[in-house]
Image: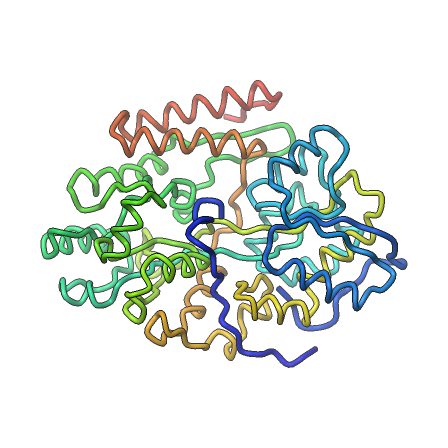
Length: 429
């Protein structure tokens, strides 16, 4: 294995991509047989072009054509049409299960995936697996943590909270001490309902074969949503639409002191509030029980192999190599990618790198621990696109005051279950 180099691991993402949001030790395990021929790859990752160059240098018998501009909608259109899909596609974690169940993706277990799956963080592999079959190779990770302005909290006499009860008290204390600002923006306005449920250990949609269980209206889910409505009702949390001009202005001017955000959000933050560099710190997500560690993920993608591919062996070889080979991983880290493999996510030397924007804090130590604390039993809906739309609807209803949390989640429950039945699923009580 090559010597690992110290690179900043926090993913840089521009504010324009705000709402759209690697390698184990050892040589890559190649599928049996000799891969060769031509493959097409659709990827919007900024690392894709150079990774293709690295891959082709090591695999002269495989010719890769890269499309960096294909949009997710184009991929779904090609899948539904039954033709026109690439051999390898970059797919959001939330959609891997949907596409796999629809028969659009090829299982990778017999194409080399079985040999490498244990090298990746468990919570990532669980998101790209359906019925114990592997359908994607994790490309990047997006663990959640708490980013906060240490100077503003100190001025308000507030310590970084470790539990959600402490967080609520901190939000009220901060608001009283800083009437022109808020401790936090509501997670419902941040479009983070699923994230907050996940972090609380709640899995609102679970699927086994053709059976589905939906529990968006469970007492636990309502409790999480009501936590945020209680904060906004107490005027202890802002309700600004994430990414909107007023949200950007509030963050830039220090009117919001704490952000519950994924690792890649650091790049957004440095673009939105460059003058605050050195004032930010990162702490673990607050938890519902003292002493426990639990996080969640927001964003992230995997490389998948299309069932339409005529050269699945070469396609799988690419998907695995660029997410597993040390030379490729080194480049991903150099380009600010966050590690997806256990060996890098636990490497003390790499994770101890200080970051100037965060006052010299080695923030990746926090993000790496949060990544490993993500519950692995979370399942994305088998019709994730529709579920995401319905969840956003519910978030907007609650945040706007059009419905209270219990009412909105009840409507969400009804809408998701009705859609599931129309798709032929049997509801499991």
